[in-house]
Amino acid sequence: MDKRVTSSAEAPAVAPVAVRDLTKTYGAVTAVDHISFTLAPASTVALLGGNGAGKTTTIAMLLGLVVPTSGEVRVFGADMSKERGSIAHRLNFQSPYVDLPARLTVRQNLTVYAGLYGIANGPERIAYVAEDLQIVPMLDRETGKLSAGQKTRVGLAKALLNAPELLLLDEPTASLDPDTADWIRRKLKDYARSRGATLLLASHNMTEVERLADRVILLDQGRILEDETPRALIETFGRKTLEEVFLDVVRGRAKQEAERPESEIAPARKAS
Amino acid sequence: MTTLSATAIGAEPIILPPNGLAASFRRIGALVKRYIYLLRSSGVRLVELIYWPFLQMLTWGFLQKYLAGTTSPLAQGAGVLIGSVLLWDILFRSKIGFSTTFIEEMWSRNLGNLLTSPLRAYELVAALSLWSVIRLGVSMVPVAICAYFIFGFNLLGLGLPLVAFFVVLVLTSWSLGLISAGVILRYGLGAEELAWSLAFVLLPLCCVYYPVSVLPDWLQVVALALPPTHVFEGMRSILVHNTFDPKELWWALSLNAVYLLAGYLTFSRFLASARVNGTLVQLGE
View 1 (tube, each protein chain N blue to C red):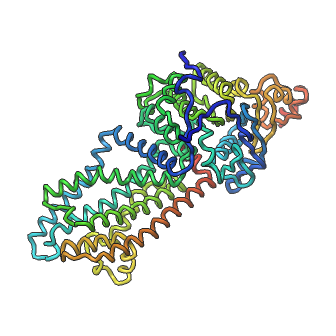
View 2 (cartoon, rainbow over the protein chains, first blue to last red):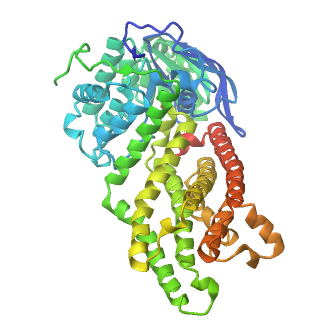
View 3 (cartoon, one colour):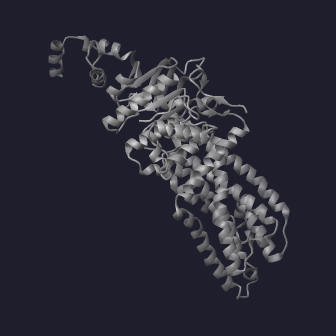
C-alpha cells in the first residue's frame, strides 16, 4: 500500500514557512503591511502584537483562509493560494475562534478529522492522542458539553491528530485558567521537541511567548517592528520583561523613547 | 499522567496519499460520516425530516380525495395533486438538505477547521450533494409509503420516468443549494433566509400544481427554461393521459447541466471572494 508514515526523522527539505512582502488590505484598511519572514525547521516562533496588529490575518493567510492582496506565502515550498491541497496534510491549527461540532462526541469529531487528514490508523492514533492529552474520559461525551479547558484540549487533539510538521496556534491558551494553560504549554513544548515540529503562535500572553518561543516577531499596525529572540527584544527595548515591551508597543512608545532615561520621558508625557 | 512512548503501536499516524480519486472519496466519506453522526445524535432532527412532508402529503391527499368527487377531469386524474406534492418535496427537501447542512457548519463554527484541512471545495460540495440525497431518502421514503397506504397513491406507478424525474429534481436542488451556500459564504449568516426561500421562487414558475398553458405566453418561456417544469408536465401527462414524451426529460437534463455548472461557478466565485474579503475568518465570530 502506498503510504507515508510521518516521523521526526523526515526533516523538511524547505523552510516550513516563507513569507515575502506579504500585504493584506480590506478597502482602505491595511491589516498586514509588506511583511517578510521565514521559519526555520523545528523552531517555535511567536507573533506578538496588540489587537488589530495583523496576527490573525497573517495566520489566516498561512492557512489559505485569506488570500493576500500582494506578496507570497509558501508553506513547505507550496504557494498557499494555489497549491494548498498538496501540503494541507502536513500542517494543522488550533484557534479559539473555531469549534468542533458541538453535537458530536469527541471521538466522532476526531474520527471525522482522521478521515479528512487521510490517517489510515485513525482509531489507534485517536487512542494515543487522547491518552497523551488526558481526554480519554471525554471521548464519548458531546463536545459542546465540555468546559473551556476541556474543549481546548480536544481542539489540540484534533490539531495533533496528523502529527503536523507545522502547527499554527492562534491564542492557544485564551480563556484558560493558569494551571490548564501551563499544562497546554508544556504539551506544546514537548510535542515540538519530540517531533522536530515547527510552531507558529499568535498570542497576547507574554508568559506564554517567553515560555514557548525561541523567536518573537513583533507586529504593530500590520508591520514587523522587531524580529528577535525574546531576550534580545527585552534588551532592545531596555525593559525587564516581554510584557513591558508589549505595553511599550501597544501604547505607541517607540524603541528610541524607551531607550531614553525615564526622567526625560516623564515630563514630556505629562505635557501631552 | 500516563503517556505512551512515541514509538508505541499506533502512535505514529499513517498518512495516506493526499491526492487521487481514492483520497477524494475518503475525505467525502469522512464528511458524510460527520453528517450521519449529527443526524443520529438527535431524534428530533429525524422526526422533523419526516414531519413536514407527511403533513403536506396529508393536506394535499385529502384535497385530492375531495376533488376526485367533482366533475373536473383534471382533478379526477389519479393522484395529480399528491404526485405534485411528493415531487415538489423531492426538490424542496433536497435543496434544504444541501443548504442547511452547509449552514450547520457555520453555526457550529467548524468551517474554518474544514477549509484548512486537506478537504477540497469540490469534495465539500460532493459530500453535501450526497448527503442531501441520503437525507431525502430518510425523509421521503416513509412519506411515499404512507401515501400508498392512506390514499392508494403509488409513486412507483409513474414507472421508469420516476427515476428521471428524481434525477432532474435533485440536480436542480443542488444548483439552488450551491447558489445559496455561495451567497451565505460571501455575506454571512445574515443571508441565511435565502437558503429557505430560494426554492420557493420556483414554485409558481415550475407549474407544480397547474399546466404551463395557464401562464401568459412570455412566462411560459421562462417556465420551460426551468428543468422542474418538464418534470411536473411529464407527471401530469402520465397520470392524466397515460402518455409520456422522453424528449422533455432530455431537454430538462440538458438544462440541468447548465444550471449545475452555473451553480458550481457561483459557489466557487463566492468562496474565492470570501477568501479575498476575509469573511471565512469572521464566520465564527
